Structure formats: C-alpha cells, structure tokens
Length: 231
Image 1 (cartoon, one colour):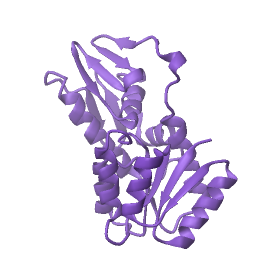
Image 2 (tube, one colour):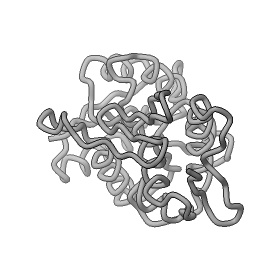
Image 3 (cartoon, helix red, strand yellow):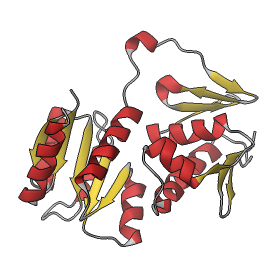
C-alpha cells in the first residue's frame, strides 16, 4: 500500500484528498503547514507528496526545495497544488524539481489519475531485477537501475522523469516525438494545454545531457511539433 503525504493548510481540501485517496487504497498522512509537512516527509519517507503552494510561514516552493535537498527523500515525486495559475509559478515549481502541477479548483478524479501515473512511473526497481540488460545504440547506453545515461565514457545521472523522457526519445531516435505523446506516455494522462511541463523538463534534461555530449546537440526541438534524439 503506497503511503502519500498531503501538505495543505486548507483543512477541507486536505480532508477531501485524504478521503478519496483512502477510497483508492492508499495510506494517507496529513500535514497542515510547511514545517510540519517537511518534518513528516523526513520521518515517514512517503511514496509521493501532494503539496500546496500558498501556506503561512513556509510555502510549498520552500518545502519542495528542502525535499529535493534532503538525500533520503530527494527523489520522492511531488504533485504541487495551487490557486495561482500564472505561468511563472509553474515554472518555479518545475525548476525546483516538482514532478506535476495541478491548479485549484481541480477535479479529484484528475488528481487520482496523476497520483496513479506518478506512482507507476517512479516505482522502485525490485532487487530481483538488479541485473538487467543495458540499452545501447551507437555511443549511448541507458542504465535503468540508476536512471543514468552513458555517452561514450561519460555518465550522467537523471531524475526518474528525465530518464523516462530520454528513454522515450531514445526508443524513437531520429523520429519526432510529439508533446502530446510525451504527456500521455510520461505523465500518464491525456494531452492538455500543459506544454510548459514538457518544456521545463526538456530544458533540464538537455542541460544535463550537454554536460557529457562533447558539444554534440542530441536533443532537437521541432518547433510546433515536438522533440527528437539525434544519434
């Protein structure tokens, strides 16, 4: 049973999320401010965090940043909730390392779909699968056990989302992958207008790959269409 931490100072929304997640079979921990939320994240090490932005004293951006800086829970997937719809707030969240973003008011069914998709995608690899075939094409090798990419003799660790994006581009190397397909395959829900989600993660992924690319630009943006991997 996956354990989910909900951090939101709005008690009604916090309870609504808790009840509906428990109906889906999840174990839910609640926190009502950023200080309590971060403490419970460290103590409980949840499988996923649902985090509100606008909270007194310590806001959601700060909590997300502290989670990403804490080695024990740094890779915990985070869904950020906010009443703010401005683009810059979404960008701020993704730059910190938030995995998904939902603007209030939201449909509880949509939140559940995103929770399922994140948990499915970030599920830890079982110990029995410790020895796995590496995926290699020309100079690129994917290392799924550590969410890493090796180009020639250089290795770069990625976040789970970045690895999944690179893997999808890798499997379609030379062919364009549309933004709609990325949203559906990586985030697990039907395409919407959330293109900034893709742009920010692609920007972070490209920056990391460029560190080991020897000046070769592997990830190409097809304007108005999508992205492709040049090998």
